[in-house]
Amino acid sequence: MRDKAIDDVFELAAIYDSKKNANHAENIDEIEAVPWPDPMRSSAYHGLAGDVVNALLPYTEADPAALLINFLVGFGNIIGRTAVYDVAGDIHCTNLFALLVGSTSEGRKGSSWAIVKRLLFHIDADWVQYKTPNGLSSGEGLIWAIRDEVSRYDPKQQEEVVIDSGVKDKRLLVVENEFAQALRVMQREGNTLSPILRSAWDGTTLQSLTKNYQAVATNPHVSILGHISPQELRKLLTSTEKFNGFANRYLYICTRRSKLLPDPKPLPESLLIGLASKIKSVIPHESIVMQRDKDGAELWRNIYPMLTAHEDDLVGAIEARAEAQVLRLSMIYALLDGSRMISSKHINAALAIWQYVQASLQFIFGAEADNDPLAGKILAALKRYGELTQTQLYRDIFQCNIAATRITAALQQLSAKGKISCILEKNEGAARSTKKWILNN
Image (cartoon, rainbow, N blue to C red):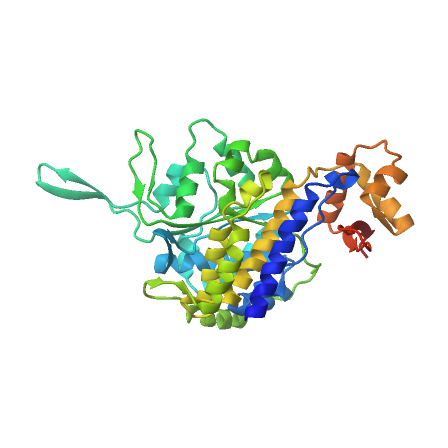
């Protein structure tokens, strides 16, 4: 266990070092294109979560990363506030906010939720039917969905009378298939959605300060699954939301079609029922205060300084809640193992997801990557020459007549569509590897 923990610390440190080095590049690669994230490490598919993804993957074109996140978010909401972790009085539950980020036509974001939703129906049909609404329009609407009972004193009866029975089940997983619309709503003057969502992630009492709105929701257990394209996210996430704590409450997952299935096989109900039975057996039915075991505590102490260290830039601001996100993910992995103790394997699984989130953030926000007509010319050049660095494209193919930012955008567009890949070639005696772009078969 000690060796594995140390390896993970070094791997995480290497990621931070590479980010730091990238920020200090001094040539054309200073604004280099960021390739589509590598697949999640296998440790992310630990235990029941991995069993679910492996079982569902043959029946869908969805990205395995999207299947995994949908399941973890769903399970974390279904169990409610039964499991908590106390961090110096700050209580963390298993509710997660996640954004699936991919192109509108090829991201397969909706289908990834649809197939997971079918599984979750066999675990808690009422939850799927009544607790997974679509759409985010206002903070008041969110509160209303899980509002407390309201009573008023009736002078005629001389007693408190219930005028609204409220909602006893405080679980809510909001699925926003058009998260871009939610971001547009937040830009309206006086809209309360952003601050109320921040409080919902924290699990604190939800209450609008609007004069004529008196509904309150105590002990909320709210999760969010949003779908959006990289272009919409860059365009609509305002500078305020990027830095005020809204953006860093989300897990950002780049997602795209995993394969072509022109005639997908029917998903057997027996498969779903079997998986659901295993999952239901680990759902806690009493309150649990979770802790880390000895190995988990040692690994956490080793990685904590790096989880709390961030670059002073946009991506750093969005990563600023890393330790809390990894904690909540590790809680869910432990619960799926039927344990109230978080061990190193649960933290390793959570770290694998977080590293994918970091790579996704670099891809989304590392450079502007909108549609660019240079894409076809780059494909033609790669077809002719086999492999090219970004510097070679800039200097030799385009004769320094095309802005490096446009080349960067075109490369990222092609990488997102799976048409090209990036390979790293080590240079003897050099601190950095050379990044080369090649066509995909």
